[in-house]
Image: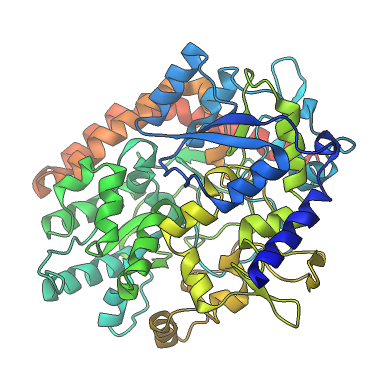
Length: 571
């Protein structure tokens, strides 16, 4: 009865907050078609959050998820003008923007019409609002992540890193692993001592995901080994007033990494099948707990992490390491600039996820209604529901006004099947959202959530530390750390241009595509080739990629400077 009363109180509160477009009762029911540019699973028919959305806004969703190649799928939709109402282009959103598939949200979003949405984007409007070919202000997508309130929260590494199973570090008595040499040496020693798991299944030392746009697992490590956060496919000197920008994959300092992978391949750490694995196969391999290490971004293999936690294989989950080159790796190698220093910087300053998330298609019959719904969903009350669920059922508020969960409630949030029935992730992951700290008190029934709590469950101190499993507590104690972000340096200041992977590449699309295709073909060949052939194959690779690297690099140099000055001039 207490749970039912809490749910009814929450619903009554939300009903009182519905904006004018919904003021005269529930509007005419509609079903919005939705495309997500990532693989995903359908929510259950009785999902309680979608039922709440339907009751308050009269909106149902018909979801479709990516099942093949992203660029090919988007290309077919653009040519046939087969647009969903809510269109998420994933990491290829530029294709649907430049293909004319999305409306300009500034026709509907303004300080007067949508004060919550405007307040959400206003601090980063210099990065988010662009100019179209006619010089008009345009905004096609409100970022799905990265517009956070308050100071940056860094309890864990959510982006790129060299990941390693915790059991490997535990086995070696919690060593400090700071360089690529130390990392691969540890993997090799562990694999030699432990070729199979307790069931006799062989371990894989190091996996490399290469499928489609996720080939960043193969390409991106070099920039991080050189001491920079994620700028996509270029290395940028942020201390240079001209932001010296160069492609890194064809440089001598990149050769050192791929020679290391070549050595690891011949030492038995890397399986040749890794280069043809699909994303689903990769996730399945990580989920069974037999992949010891990989370079990736934490969000990319979150379903595998959840599977390992569900199975209570805590020692098979991963710690994120911020590796850099050992001095011997780059001895005598020309650096990007004379004063270049290699310091570990994997965590970047807070970054809006520019051009990532839902846009509204030009064929959508009700853009005003979607924007009005988003505006209302940016209320504190709705954001609390999307993040924490129903008070008394999914979480509770203690006497100090802090958001809390029991162990059982928290364990539910880690269960994939439970989330399909009790969370609205297929919608909320691509929608505008609040992140960071809750800045104002929130009335929930007869209780108050005090300012200072965190919007995201995974950032709430009482959850991160209070409900951490015993294995992780002991593991961190082995290092003398308080949190998993302690394995890397604190976040650095975000560069004026943001992160260069967000820049639109379409003006040099052909050169960029060829630049990536050469890497996709030649880098696996380099890793697997006979050691005696490596130098010659590297030289051939550099020669083959040079024309595309030159054109793409020159474009990026100009684009980085332009983007940096757009932000600097508006500060």
